[in-house]
Structures are given as C-alpha cells and as structure tokens.
Length: 367
Length: 199
Image (cartoon, rainbow over all chains, first blue to last red; front, top):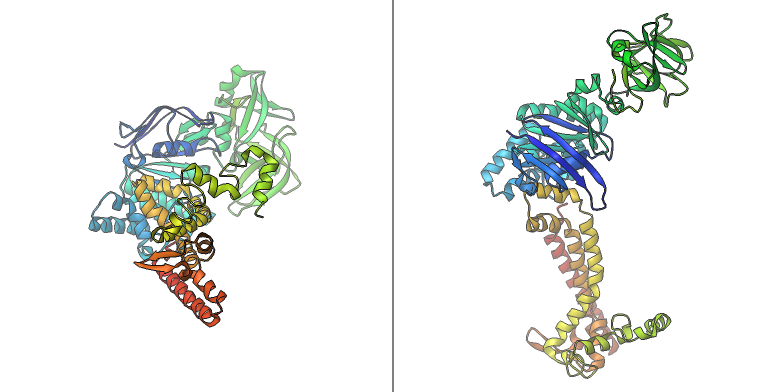
C-alpha cells in the first residue's frame, strides 16, 4: 500500500501568507489523483509538501502509513517530474536516469538493467548518449519520467509536466502518461491547471481554490454535479455559462427568471427548487446543453441574436448575449455545422434537466 | 584620484579619516597598525615580509589574489545563481547530499567560469608587473626565492619585460613578450582541454 494521507495540513509562509488551510485528503494506493485549480490556489505547494521540498506548518502527512513530516525528500521513496524537467544539463540521458541509483550505491549492472528497462518503456533507447539540450521538449519530458521510473518509487509526483509542450505534443504525452500509469500501477499525484488534462487522466480530481479544497470526485462527478459555481465553471471546456436569476413559483410552475428571460423548469429540478421560491440564485448551463434552432415555441427556449459562429469541423461554437446582466458572452456548442446564421435571431433551447442552480454567491449547489 | 578618498571622507565625516576600510590612502598603514604589524619600517615593508626573499613572492601572490577575488566572486555567484533551483530539488529527491550536489552539479555547471578564471589568472600572473613593482622596488625588497633560487624581483614575469625595455634591451623584451604569449597560449589550451564544459 502506498497511499498518501493529509491530516489537517496547513502551510504558512514566513511572510504569514496562508497558502494551504486545514487540508484533509486521502489519496488511495495506485490511484491517479489530480490537483487542479487556478494559479496560486496552492496545488503545487501541496505537491511539494508531499515531496518534502516545502515544510508543513501544521498537521500531519503520511505516505504508506508512515508519518513523513520531518523525513528528508530522498528518504520518502517518491519521484518527481518537474514542470521544466529539471534534467541535469551536463549529463547524458543515461546519466540523468542513473544518477539516483548511483547515489544509492546500486551496482553498475543493476543500474544498466533498470535504465534500459525504463528507456524501453519510454522509447528512449536511441537517445541514451545525448545531452538534454540535444532533445526536443517531448523527449526531455520522457527522460524526466524515465528518471522517476528507474527508482520504482511508491509515489510519482508530476508538477504540471505538460505545460511547456505544444498542444499536439501535450495530447501525445497525455496518452503516454495514462499508459504508464496502467503499466506501472503506481500511485500518481499530478498537478495541472488544465482541466482537460485533469478530466482525461484522473481517477479522481481535487479542485482547489485559495488553498481550500472545493470538491473531490471522479471527472464525471465533477462535471455532472459541481458542488459550487467555481467548480462548475472550472471543469468543462468551453466553460459553463452562468447568470444571476430568481426562482419564481406561479400556479405550480417553477421558473427561472432573469431580467430579460424566463425559463420554465420541470421534473427533478423543479421539485428540488420548489422550496426556494423568490430566492436569488446563480444559474449555470454548459454549452452543449444549449441548442440553437431556427425556430422553437418551446417554453425552455429564449430568442437571442447569434453574434459569432466558430465552425470547428466536428462542432461549432455559437456566441450570443443571454442578458445585459451576464458578465460575458454565452456560448452554445453544436455538433457539426449549425443551422443558424450569424446575425439572425435563434431559439436557444436548453436541456432543462442539465441546468445547474447554485446559491446566489455560487458557494452551494441547490439543484 | 589619489586624494579622492580623502576628499570624500572630509565631505562625509572628518572623524572617519583614520578608518582603515574607508580611506585607501590610510588603508595599509592603519590596517597593519591595528593588527600589530607596524608601519613602513615594520614587519611588512623594508625589513619585514617584503624584505624577506621567502615571503615576498607569497605576499605578492596574496595581493594579486585579493585584487582579483571580487571579480571572480561576482562571476561565480552569477553562474551559481543561474543554475535552476529545480535542478537542486531534483537532486534532493534523487538522494544527493551537499557534497554530491557540489561535486556532480555545481562544479560541472560552473566549469566555463572556472576555465575563464584559470586562463585570465594565468595570463595575469605571466604578465604581472604592477604588484611586483609596487611591492618591491620602492621598499628595497628586491629579491625573491623561486624554486630554491634567489632572484631579483626584476626577473619576475611582466616586470622582467618592463626591466628589459627600460634598460634598452628592446629585442630581448620583444622576444620575451613572445615567449610569454606562447606560454599563455599553451596553458590556456591545456586548461580548455581539461575543463571542457559538458553542458
């Protein structure tokens, strides 16, 4: 077992800045857990605390059941892949991968064997004698992973490993990391600010903001049932459209009323919001739950002018202004080419059962 | 230029005039007095360190080292600060202690600066004139001990070149300068070979 447990962990820097507050988390053995959040949310600090590169101000941290608050990084049996790869520039690929084993006094033959095994897995066999500056970004990233693999650690730590790569390579490396996890079955803690990476790789995602955990759950859980407006907006691309509204109940009909729109709710949503009549809320709709049509008399649609259409081939993004009060332009996502045209009025049909309702300040999910 | 320190000191505070570290004109006298090594005719000059053939050359070498130390320090600090922190953090996780980090990371990565310092230092030694002239001629400490031989300070490095020139042996001075150039090139090549950067 090589789980990681945080018990009431806090991190306060010398200038009294509180980065992590009362952090409780149990990372299971062999789990691929991703810490995600905007810049400055404390995700990298959390990872560095596991690595031992940051001291814990209070609370306890356990790896494999052992309290490691005061254990040196080298004795934690972890391996870390850094954002900038942190390869030793004067050493060859082989030397980079062998360095930790050499320091641990592992025999030359054993080192050779392990380096070859790792390089085989990562396709680095032809590059073993090269220096890091002779490698591409993707190859460097693979060497950094190889350096971690040779040690067969209890926990792998990845600190935004793909953020220095171009979009195409990022997709490729993402697949390789997923394969690697399946192959090695080691616990992985992975930090990223890219929610697509989080959604595609993770067994569970921890969404963080301002040093606090906002929600922990599987990618689909987070996507389908975000616990607050922040998680709703952060997970999913393009992000969730949100707008202030009011719950109105008239003649048994529960509706969502904004300054210039009314959307009738039904089913589970309506039932859940019956008791919130008159309450100010924040409504959220994901782009794929809005369907622009040429005409529709459905009560769940609103008529809006199509401002911009972005055809992407397999899908199209349609931008429109939902309300004068909305803080940004709304976007709808359609499969393939859309039937509506730029500049014309279209009926925006909502999937009512997919509308997310949060408290006015966005801190709580109501339905 | 010579009186600049005095003028500046008087501008700031007259009471600092005797402060060894602030007045270059008073520096040596005051510093040596404070550490009990006396004045002009004391331990350092005529009858002292610079008057002793065995101590004169090390004293000159020390002066040259002190003179170049600041520049070298700035280059080394800059080179060390250019090594990303994450490389040391990776080494921490890999199990390196301070010695491993110095041996396997810092020294290999500052090799270009070591090479530069060794070459410029060697050339400075081969062409040394100012320090030898200033520390021997005017004090009478004109003999030095080199590898068991007692030599006139005028036989040392760049000063020898100057002496030949000033005595009118222009051909000899020119030949000597070429010899110095040859030695400097040879030492530089050896250093470049030995300290070739792996980066």
